[in-house]
Image 1 (tube, rainbow, N blue to C red):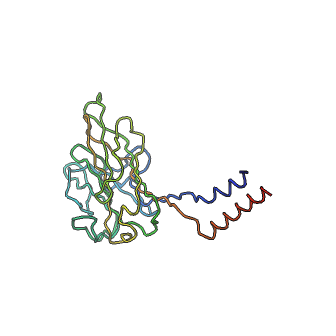
Image 2 (image 1 turned 45 degrees about the vertical axis):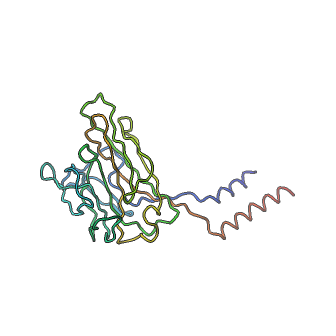
Length: 254
């Protein structure tokens, strides 16, 4: 097969085009938020940027949480395990009462996994731009793992859940993983398919963790949800390319 034919065949596989649906934090190995009005961490929702602040958790809280947390620090801090992006949440993904309309994305988020609060959840509406064949990728990055005994080999062994159902295998976050991102892939079908896209449907992603050793906390650097388009060429374009390739083969044999 000559170079021209190889190039034409490669066009039949349309490359993926990733789009970040939402994110909290930046890939900068730091947390800029202080749990107060400075709102120093960057976040995005469907391409629109805003600012948030990480807050120390107050322990495990009732699901599905409160989208109107006010941040704070010390004994007055107000934060729960559930972060809400702006949207309409009237249809629950399970046996609970959804929170209704969330006009503005929360300004404060739970900033770490801890022994006393090993869960983190993010609620969102699935944009109608996500295609049925798209691959959704959730990525989380931590910038530290604090231990009461530095000599331990400690970790937070994490599982990933979509609307209350586990997806993929357990992944450990240990001392050796400080600068490594961790990710899980899933599909639109894990979120109820096209029938549950758009406003009204409460979808949530969750990390559940089990600490080992003397782990005390693991602080977030950023989390992100991305949609990678697995496009199929239009029939007319595909037939045109196949016809061109076939012509080249016939020409070469003659």
